[in-house]
Length: 335
Image (tube, rainbow, N blue to C red; front, side, top):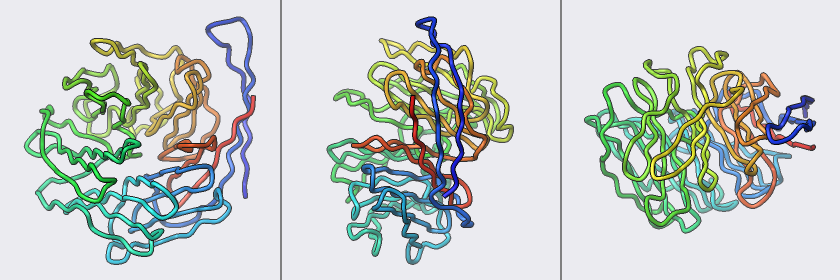
């Protein structure tokens, strides 16, 4: 197990004191010719990852060991997102034509196809479930309208349709399965973000242009994290992943979303962002990992290691990461 330790200090905007933070990343598994972009952390011990070449990685001992599974009959498919409910039950999303969703109830030994769509241009990007088993998948536009699919039974069945107009060249990134989030509201519970020629936040049935790098197929928003009436959006240009310009936006949800930019942005393109609490946030991408301890106003690079996705345990405290070459890591923070 390799460890990387970083020490840094950030001046908090709300007071004249310095907070020292120690970030330790341990690599739990790596060295496989697989790109992992799906990550679901059920609790501190049960972790599922999904990725290219029909690959699934599962740990039930907090990352001490991983079981690697190739889904039978789907060894060429790219499973860009995964939602796990326990050590035995998970749903995986295969992105391109035909788009498919599979479910296992026996820990990954067998998988049942619960959704398939062969429509030309079909490409699924991200999937989210709420605590009641309601799932929402968002996909690239079909005839300039966003593809949506909903499940109301923990992924056992799905209903697909198109809605919400997009601009020409606007779509979504399947970079980390985190460009759609559930806000915990009964009405208009979902928000999601787009990229490409235009980058928009979709909120309460309307879309709002995000003041972020856009205009190319590789630019725009990749991920959104939501906490109560606030959100953080990250992205940038994945073909220039070390450029920090216009890659992070802070959001206040009101009747209309209010956008602002950080004082110090993350140090490059970032494909995933999460809240650990109202002040502490983490984001990752192909050029490294950044942390904020003041609600996203200031970011500090803590690692140049490449990861696609980062997630916190749904019921615990541990933070896991997944990325290229079958790399899975765990991050621990201590003040």
